[in-house]
Image (cartoon, rainbow, N blue to C red; front, side):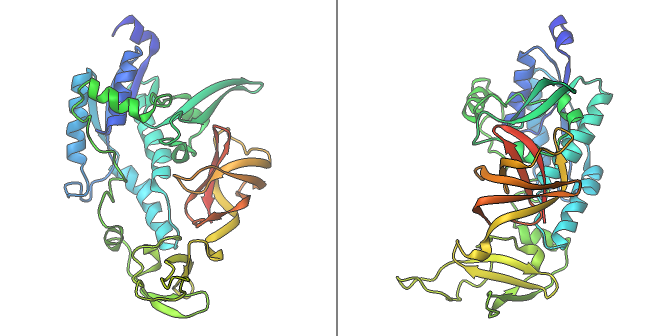
Length: 371
């Protein structure tokens, strides 16, 4: 180990076999850290199938590590993942909600089980290929670690990281936080990384690209029931409330039901709007702007604040789903068990089980689960 890397410290970086974590590993080494790669195996049930590419991902990660010149090892967190993430995922779907397992995976696996393992390897820091930033500021109470959006807002992943705490952020580096994705791809090609042209992953391994309903069918019983309009008219049958999410347009199986017509004679599209678990009824509406799809306020529970305490009530911005522009809002109620947000502009398809994440400018404050 060189004097410069000894001075900078040891970083254990999660290497997934993707371009982002590969370039992040190279950047850390260029910055003078002693870098060790760790490949996390989080799913075992069918990782040899066409939908889950664990074996190829490991080969890609190992090839990159070899080229970049860092050691890499594989660690199996499949048991922890099943207990801490997948069990919650199934519970939420069984209750008619739509969870975001990436949020829980970051909090419970990538920045908990992974961090604990990295510490046993003598790590000073852990790092990932996430697009986000950490800033440390001096306050009267001591050093405060803030989670910031990435400079490349089109790739920002702070939404998925909002459950991280002070202890985790103090040990975390995000090498890609200041870099646009286009530059990451350029670097990958310039370095001739073996995965430079690899497509970005579009989902968590246990689902991958497979049909979602087919996957859930293996773990949750189907409970068919009626699909109704707000007026109580039955327009079809659903396969089970767990298989539908609010705002869903495709896969409802009622395309032939005309319902309301536009002036040009075509029919408005149908959207999932509500679930009634008591009667096992799925309610659908026509038109993207139907009142049942719009909400001016929400309540959230299971809260997590990055600073370790809740922000003061007042004006902020929030995301109620990833890939959404920040929406101005008012934090109206804050309690130990949750908070309330109100919006000047109604939000579309606010979905129980998803995360409501609060921002103050570029600073991610934390959030909770919509219910």
